[in-house]
View 1: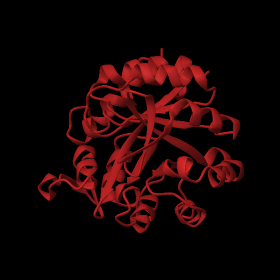
View 2: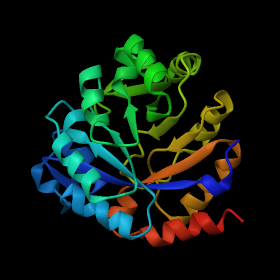
View 3: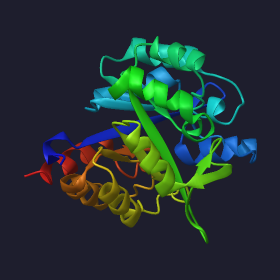
Length: 258
């Protein structure tokens, strides 16, 4: 049971080619679409500092170059940690112990493991056992004719049944999940509330909603799900293009708590 008092907004800093971009352009660029899609917001540190100044208590940093195997922006993630004094959650391409240690060495509060949870489950179990609350598992979900499947490698590969993997991770002691319907990430088509409710029904660990937020109403609805285990929401594209200002998002989820 999560108290509404703890519901968090995680404004995202999506890094591609060393620049923080809007979520939609970042995702599409890593899928190999046209470079004319570039929608830069600034350096990762500048963008993170702007979110901190707007009142965020957490920043969600996505290294999309690392996630898609195009490179690493760990030095820029270190810049983000140096620029802000709030909590930072990092994801993208963290697939082995060497990379995990390097990212944790930046001083971030939490890392999200995605592809590794499917491709290297034994190591993932060891990481959960060793680092506990510093590890969250990103469950990037695709709806298919075979049910919910998990997507890896920057959402480009389908691999594994959601419920089988969730059961295994729960048994391994995973303390937190970040759940994204990959058809909605960066698309502002509203979160998949049904998916979130189904995941919360099967795990007692808290869940962060990973994508699709398009309005303040979406955020209020997610905050209402805190009673079943939704702990927070990542705010990307809608924030990046100015549709949902961060100050308004924070105020809306605060007001829905009372």
